[in-house]
Picture (cartoon, rainbow, N blue to C red):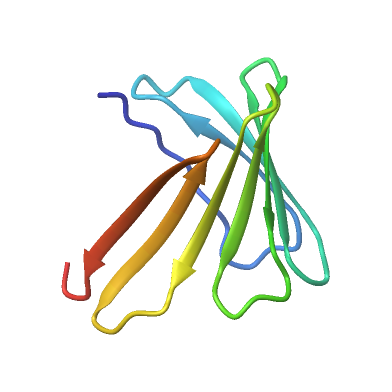
Length: 105
């Protein structure tokens, strides 16, 4: 299994940082742009070639993210209301996946 590491600033307007592999080499770059509402981020490989973009829907009760890959695939990640558990629905190119966690985990 590969591990990746990054440091993200807490207070920021825009953010640009590298994601490092186990050996400390740059594997990816993350660029977050300033938006008054919402969230937009791009992830590039070590050669700065775009891999995917992430957008957060502004007007939704729970968090919803749309991930668009450069090869045309997409993924939609949605949080759901639940008590004492965390539920997230993922639609990856028409395939559904549900993640569930416990409050204390």
